[in-house]
Length: 462
Image (cartoon, rainbow, N blue to C red):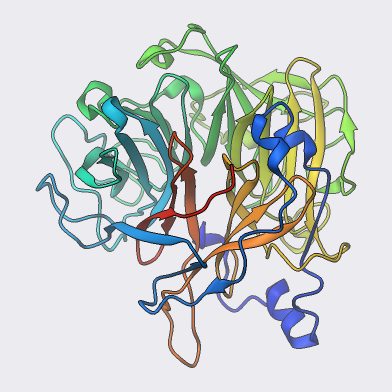
């Protein structure tokens, strides 16, 4: 995430500000109807948000009038388990239902070896003692009060995003390919791990090696077929791939993914780079899935491997991934010719229909329409119970959570008010991990820096 924002780069937002165009050109295009088709909430779309953001007198989180927040956890505080301090770099997150109305929040910490506050090592939950990343889990009661906070997995590296499973666990993804002996690591990294936030020792710290070793970002699970879709956020050309994992055991439960399966990469016939497709509604039939030659990348990173004379399809900044209706959606946060992509864009959302084997470009963020929001680089993304989409912004300047309606109307839902720069040169950390409680009444979201987890309540439209 933050490693992809290069210091000193003139961003699109900065350029527009200098030319006086900011506020009229950062835009969004596409038909969102299909994102929410088949959901009851889809009938309630069409509103333009909840009103202007009100500055927070505490300087933490700006929200529309009528909404309020609770700080559930901040980096540097003591974990309620007594295991150490709340780690840095709060990233991907999910909210899973528990017994008696409880909610289990499981939260990634995208920590490298230089992390300010690492995830504490805990016996039975630590993969590599040299790894500083991992997950922490919070349990909330039916009134939203924090009952517990503890380590859920430790000793992993650069835990960026991931995704929930239909059986109530979290798959946390390492966004690195570092091998044992690199950066002091004692084991290879670049894996997915399954986390049970209710009872972490049941899941332990076991890498799901058959699901591939690469710079993982996020996953989404097809609840009917058990197929797991995976995005790869590679930092240099050739860029990442979009994968699917066909597990040997299709009726999933905790631990069944350890039984192995086949890892495949998506090939779009005639398309080597998804950034070359610019028009919303562009659709491709008969998508091919090609077996990955070496999922463990023992000698060669997967995206460099030989997929035959037809090659494979790449895309820059593949990030968010989620399941909606009968389709999987995935996000490309941006593409830049100067960095090796075939074309420039400021964010795309793609839909893959497994039944029809059809890939469709459904959303494009860019300068060719007239909406003011959202800003550059959409990242974590989720469907809201109110019938809309929530998007975490990961760019420069002010950082927002944006809401998007089915009609393409976009509004600011939250703004980070924590200035980590100076009064003369302010800077704000990105948002990440936006998710909703199982009853849809609370939005949870992380501020990456300083690591802060918020619970937002208010008059959500239903």
